[in-house]
Length: 136
Picture (cartoon, rainbow, N blue to C red):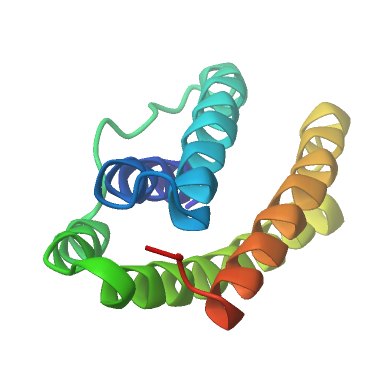
């Protein structure tokens, strides 16, 4: 689930940068791409340690959400992007808190705990975008 979330956040961050250059939406999209790409690489290490394969692409739901977002322009794009990011980051924070509470691997717990801070920062940006969508 965490791996799919990282893939989705990276995938929707890219069109935010391309479709809304010079806006807070684009800046947030760039942050998502950077932070979730880093998370993907770090998570890959834990998955390999557990003998799990990292997914190469998003699931069908993520693909549909990305396609729906990419069909929008301007402020409609900003509003849907912000809505998706608030929803997604609330779910991701809850998931990381579960990992911190339930995981037996101390290194994984520490990693998830650190990611909660990053996700909360992202959630703050998404909430701000909901209040004040992109300026162009």
